[in-house]
Length: 103
Length: 419
Image (spheres, chains in turn red, green):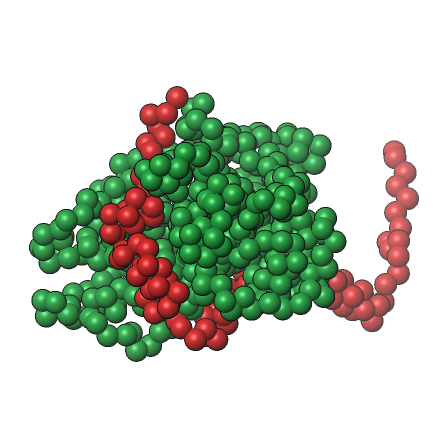
């Protein structure tokens, strides 16, 4: 008959010690979760911060509509006449290619 | 080569074999499923499917995808050549991100500082914000002509495409359409992107009215938050300035935009020229007509920005009055598909018309459903803005890289090992 040598408790942990260990383990776990969610947030913060910078540029601009840009209107007067004029069509418009038919 | 015109760049982004760990992160961000390779093996990019947006590049945790087109030395050579006028066409999104390369906080608006550093390096400035205003005039007038013709039944003298009209500013989006949905090409606005308008304008109007130099001595460098712009500027059809001069008897062949720097490339160029961006002086460039821009031009860098700018002008062109509240908030923010409707009274006919618009960013998740509607012929919209990168150009593939990646909009699932 096999002989079993069985020890009831390898480590003696009192109720108070058990609570302490669980407390520390929980804190470590929650810090991990907290950091991980922060990281995911961080990953879109660059977009938001840069977008804010651009909207700030819009707010401080003296002229806020394209058709009121004086330098642009001067260019049309001196050079391209008006949007969609023959010269504008030639210089400022393009065509596209069906790439499924290429090579 | 399959899917490419002659002389177009076909390799812009390549995955470094030594750095790739085969973690599949890039596949989550790739809008066209252009990345091949099994989990755990070295990945490679299929250049036929690739639209060169660079989203894999800014989001790879190991920095494996790299931009292999490096024009920095060539541009420095041009800057040292006294005969050449080097014009930098600076995109809106560059001014809020370039500071990050020099240790400043993200989103800091640095227009004057950037102009100053550009001047120090020897560039003339052509602000793309001006070209964006220009794009709005051309693209908005095109939309208006379509509305007048198709919705109000007026005759037209222009050769018009179809409604809904898609924006055509994003080169990755344009290539995506050309590759995958050629049947909606008539819906793309025929207007060039702001960079390309800037190129042809610099070598015609800029040459005679602003810098007073020969067009062949102007070297236009696009400064973009974008890797796909490198592809766009290699497209052979963009030589309108050269053709314009040829009709007037000058014979010289040159592209509208000669070269292209990303925000990262520009930072490297400054460092190579020993320009300390942190201490460079502010320069307003007030006398330069091509650096005057409106608020509508600058918001082009954000998702929804092109639409907002277009609505401000379309409203004026249709009603004859200015829009009262300029901040059109329904098109702002990071929601995947944003919709809005604007009712206005047509000045000419006195009829009421409702302009229905949609804004999407991220092709794979958000644009495809709208394209399918257009293909099926039941799209409720008149005007649709598409930007390939999540958040718009501010988060483009040419922007400063942060080790944790920048475009995790709705992509947190990519962290789960089974996705």
